[in-house]
Image: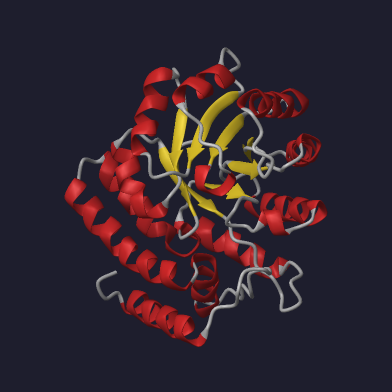
Length: 293
């Protein structure tokens, strides 16, 4: 449970049903890139815009295609504890290696309720848990004190997916919880997260440029910081463009140009406009020609 994990996108057909063949192709493409593992059904996968049965079907497809060749983490998070437990039990039945969950959102639950949510999922599924810390997405920010209380002596809690610009928190998690695994969340600060002690990273742009982030990771481990910085800067050039037009929409457009038909994002995401499509096409041509990328 270390290294570069792809937070998988979900391909859709024009009618917004899951494009199962494209999902299979996407998984194989990432495996060929040498990705270290998959984070399935998270924010990148548009899971909160999908039904429970659709989310479970994605779990099943990814498991079938990967065949146990890399670790799989299933995001089971939901606003309802019972719904999250249901997703976690599905992942367990399929043979996933771990589950993850974003904190319950919308109602501004107090910390004791959030702690109980996580313990209920772990006790019901009896699986390793990677807490998904995403303050910008659900309004709850996990700090080292609360994390320590959740982890306690229960070793089923093994790590945190830290999707936040607060890099100091990574160091605090590592220093205060023995043996914890921390994954950096934001792709644009992958190298910075590693420098603060992250054990790896989980990201969405890894869907189409996982190889570059594996190089960043390996260069960092080898002490070749100059090369890692160069590669991170190249990735940031791409990410900067995508942030302007919509990251998920641009990622899907990029993969479609690469031969994996990803289709649209689900509503209320807006479709990528013509200007955005042209910008992604230019990025694709640069990547394809190996120019400065």
